[in-house]
Amino acid sequence: MSKAELMDYERALEAYEPVIGLEVHVELSTKTKMFSSAPNVSASTEAEEPNTAIRPVDLGLPGTLPVVNEEAVRYSISLGLALGCEIAEVSGFARKNYFYPDNPKNYQISQFDDPIAHDGEVVVELEDGTVFTVPIERAHMEEDAGKLTHIGGATGRIQGADHSLVDYNRAGVPLVEIVTRPIFGGEERTPQLAAAYVSTVRDIVRSLGISGARMERGNLRCDANVSLRPRGTEKLGTRTETKNVNSFRSIERAVRYEIQRQAAILAAGGTITQETRHWHEDTGRTSSGRPKSDADDYRYFPEPDLMPLRPSAELVAELRAALPEAPAAKRRRLRESWGFGAQEFQDIVNADLLDVVDASVAAGATPSGARKWWMGELSRIANDRQVEVTSLATPAQIAELDGLVEAGTVNDRLARQVLEGVLAGEGTPAEVVESRGLAVVSDDGPLIAAIDEALAAQPDVLEKIRSGKVQAAGAIIGAVMKAMRGQADAARVRELVLERAAQ
Image (cartoon, rainbow, N blue to C red; front, side, top):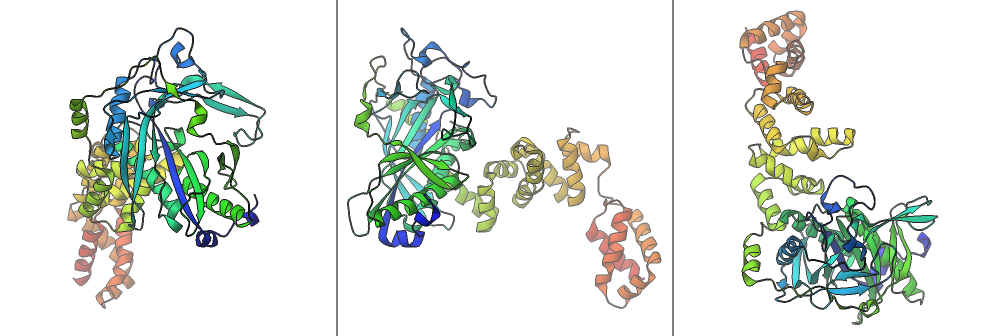
């Protein structure tokens, strides 16, 4: 569909009300898979050779029987509680039947009418402070499918590929799928609401420590359902489901695109096809996938090889008591405690550095110092090296570095050299200061000698200072800082320059 076939966004909203539903799949970082002893590849940062992290159970070979991963059940209950859900006294597994190359058994062990968690809600805050409450229908456990790699196309997607390779390493990885009820009221901010909701879920998952929740690695994936209904009507429109959108920005763009695309079709008298769609990051558009199946089409029936789960009240109480502070509450507390403006704080959140800045402050850094180092020099170095910024240094190192600056042991210019030494493996910040001789000169003697030399070399500047043009002292300060190789306190140098000039 060309851009000309998209309705203007504002016009689309005048005629139609957008309704969305979001399905977020979270890979759990258990040591082993959901129903087998095979290693969980999603919990590892190192890539496994294709089709090596598998067991007969993962492939559904005859005679194999699944065994439920207890840790995955605990993680799922914790997530359900954090989403404000009720935990089912009895929940069971079902076989979801469908054929696809990455599904070796031709069915997926999932949960159907007895999910582990149901009827919750999540409070979502947009960047402008607007708050929405998103209703959660269910959070259910299931196993992941394998992974297809499409060969021969220009984009790595199935469209245009010559053939596909299948890797079953991911088959059987534990998942929790979180399904919302229809979300109303987003209006023109519906795309932002969708992205903010997924971001909120990611924050909850990370705070629980149950998943890396890295969208670029597929640890967290979102399917975005979008439908439109004419203003003033009650009946929901036909929905489309854009599959596996892998970034917050893409979620926002995909939802906006679908609103404009569907509005153009409806306004022209057409009908919306209920189908899955694929998001194309390069073109910023969606394309048709396959007709969307309803639940009945999967022919669910109870998994005969697994008994129902009956988590005890004691276990649920234990996991509820262990829940961490809600991410939204934590952000409000930290912003107030640190005294940052809204944009300053949001920049940290957007950079995904809130936790490491918080850890640095907890280790002794000032909030402004922690923000400066992580958002500034460290982020620049990480970008140059194409690595994760949090892999460069520890919160304890940054707290120590910031402490040296606060104590006046080094200035900002010297501190950057200290950081360079730390990243080069030369030791702690204090050890680098000692080994490189980077401490600020605190003895006035060498400073006075350098000041007198600079004043003597620039008598015209000296006369300007004596005539009341104090800003002229900058030239002398610069000369002294150069002579001291930056190892001087500029404020102290200024004091001494004015004192010597007055004599």
